[in-house]
Image 1 (spheres, helix red, strand yellow):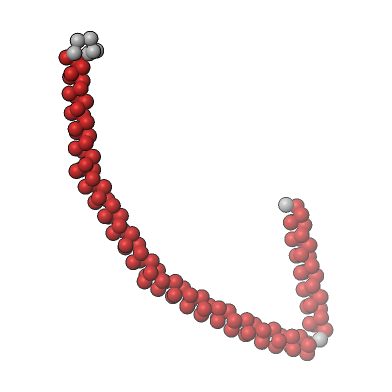
Image 2: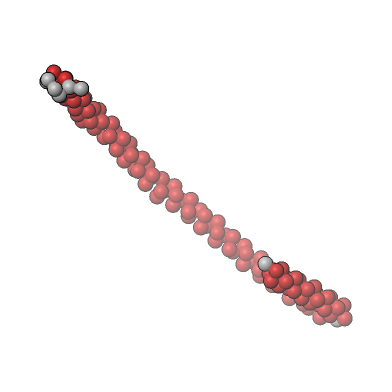
Length: 125
């Protein structure tokens, strides 16, 4: 951690010293400073143009993603929801018409078996 702090302070010191030299150089030759200023303005305009183009591309990509979500993903989700509803209905049907009668039959059979065990001599507890 101390290494990173030391590196950060060294970079800050270099930037401050370089800025001081740049200001001193600009004060000594105003004509050259104007030329550098004009070049920097041109580069800033080109950079703004590139950033604007990147923003336009980003907006187009977001629009395409939105269209994909609405036209492709939503129907898949709706189909999945229909499938889940069908599975729920099938589970409820099987539970009511297959599992419940089997449980009732097994419980009735267990009751009859227990009653017979109680009626037999020596087997009931």
